[in-house]
Every structure is written in structure tokens, then in C-alpha cells.
Amino acid sequence: MQSASLPTASRPAHRLLAAMPMVFVLLWSTGFVVAKFGLPYAPPLTFLLLRFVGVLLVLLPLVLLMRAPWPTGQIRHIAFAGILLQGGYLAGVWCAIKLGMPAGVSALIVGMQPILTAFAAPLIGESVRPRQWLGLLLGICGVGLVVAAKISLVGLSWQSITLCLLALVSITLGTLYQKHNCSHFDLRTGTIIQFAASIVVLLPFAIYYEHLGPSLDTVQWTPRFIGALLWSILALSIGAIFLLFALIRKSAATRVTSLLYLTPPTTALMAWLMFGEVFNLPGVIGMAVAILGVVFVMKK
Image (cartoon, rainbow, N blue to C red):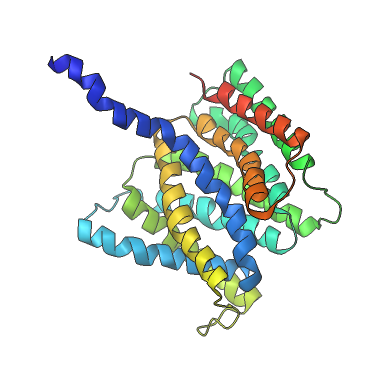
């Protein structure tokens, strides 16, 4: 009787683990929507710094109350990974969108991360099977179809394209570095370290380029901005990042990053629901191809 009850008892936990990738995709995709809502009211680096400080204000009291363990011997690795995953990636994408890069195009560029991760996977001792390569190629094609059906590249500046490429490289290196050097740490204290390190790196740039000062006079505190800021703190910087770290810890880096292929089609669907943007047949086909690519990569 005891052995028979174990599978039943483990079903809720198993279902929760199975749902984690899809929840992550949904949360991660809202990042582009939040940028569209919030950036008209604050410069990108200033917005991100407010977001990072908000995360610290939420997590630090909880960490102290729960007496969460602080990592020993890994702090510099955790901080460096955080600078890449939080500071470099977000700063690149948000600055690019501020310069006029459409959210869908930025999602396409960042959506190429899995192919870079696959190329670099042997460096951290991971292998990529032929079926996974096929999945990676299908993902690229699917992402391209979705974005090509929605957005024209005419008028994009080289600055915005370069910033998106830097974001792509940053999140790829951050994922591989964390997987190899510090994949096991307490998420509560580790997240505090990563956002604190990102604040230290981004603050001088915000002061110099965006004239950030104590009065925050470059910020318009509208209800729309406050809502975008709160969502970015609670749902994105805490919810989505915790899920990302948990997925990195449980799966190979190539399989985890393949989930990002679903971000552009999911973002396109959100844009259709929220802003009434047309979602045509090529977009639907691209979404199906991208999902098929993820299945090829994720399947054991």
C-alpha cells in the first residue's frame, strides 16, 4: 500500500514541474509588452534600476526573515552571471526598444540564443544530438516566420541592432557561465547578489547617459508606468527569473534556452489580444514550426 501511494502523492509535484516551462514562457514574453508600456515614461536604464531596487526591497526582508543561507565561495561567480543575465541582457533589449527597435524584431534576435548555446555547449561538457540540431533549425525558421509576418526591418538603426546583438550574447554567456560555475545556490540570496551587482554596473551609465539624479525627474509617475514597474518587479524579475534558474538547475542549458524560441510567437499572440494586431496565416505557421522545434530539442 505504501509503495502504491507514492506515485499518487508525487503527481501534484510532477504536474507543477511539467508546467514550469510554459509558465516561464508566458512570463518571459510579457517583458516586451512591459517595455512597450513603461518606456515612454522613463529612460531604459533608469527604469531597470528602479526595477532592480524594487526586487531588492521585496526579497531582502524575506531573506532575512527566513534566514536563507548566503553562498560561500561562489559570490563572484553568481554576481558575474547576474551582470550578464540581468544587466547586460535587459539593458541591451530595453535600450534597443527605446531607440525604435520593434518588440517582435528584438524577440527574434534574442530568440537566436539557443543556436549560440548549442554551438558553445561542448565547452561546458554538454553534447547536442542530431535531432536537437534539427529542432534548433526548426526553431530559427519558426521564429523568422512569426516576426517576418508582423514586422518590416526598414528603418532600424545600427545602434538598436547592435544593442540587441549584445543582449543576445550577454544572456547566452550568462546562461552557460551560471550552468557551469554556480548552478546550485539558494535562489533567494543568489538573486539579491545578482541584482545588486547589476545595479553597481548600470548606475554609472544611467547617471552619465540619462542624467539620473536623486530627484528622479526623468521619470513620469503615471498609473501606467507604476503598473509596468510593479509587474516587471514581481512577475518578471522575481517570478520569471526564479523559474529560469530552476530550469537551468534541472535541465541542460541547450534544452532550457530552447524555450526562448516560444517567446516571439507568444509575444505576437499577446500583442494580438492586447493591442488588436493582426495575426495572419504565416504567423500561425511560424508559431507551429517554432513549437515543433522546441519539442525536438526538449524531448529526451
